[in-house]
Image (cartoon, rainbow, N blue to C red; front, top):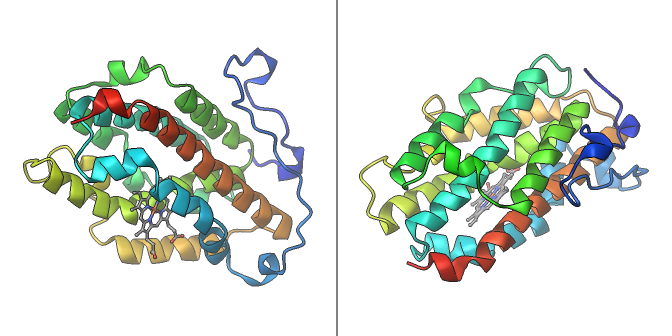
Length: 251
Ligand code: HEM
């Protein structure tokens, strides 16, 4: 199913949706930024989301986590939210695997659900507890991922922001967690290990080449960038929620 981005205005779960604020408006932007016409999509997404990336990096929850000051329950809660987000991403990926826009970046080697479940067990949780987390930020994020099924370009934004992040900064975060929490080698950090992608660098180069070859016009590329920014803000909301809970998860 491939819709034009301009056709997409209503969330797929329609007026029955109970998740407040989940369906952010889709912006019908007229592209007027010269970078849209000249820069490859991979460069556009990277440079266009730098500010949002810096904000994500500076979240108190992440800062405390990489300093080893979040307890196992706190990290399990974060993983539990991610489990719900990746379940949605990986569900949409199955639906869009033959999509002309999303298909070229979808790759089962990226799937994280089994790794997250393995990590949840190490951090004292499980998929059932993850499903029961009371988290409006997770609810909103999941709805937005599911909505992205409406147009491959929207899903590419979700796919890029999570998986390329996991293959980039995520690699360092995994190493820091192993060290700060004295984990057995490899235990509890499967999320950051891509068994089928032993060398993230060439994989990311190939991913960027695939992004750059996607059949998108300037309006479509602008929509992908807009959605990447939305995805960063959804991740920011998740971190804000976790940051507010830090006192109860202090290690
Ligand atoms: C403590 C938190 C974080 C740290 C330390 C971190 C660090 C990094 C680093 C070092 C890179 C590589 C930059 C480069 O190649 O020059 C990167 C790339 C990336 N990160 Fe993060 N990151 C963090 C959080 C996040 C979050 C929360 C997201 C989104 C959910 C994210 C998404 C990305 C993406 C999409 C890229 C790839 C950019 C590109 O090459 O196109 N990061 N990150």
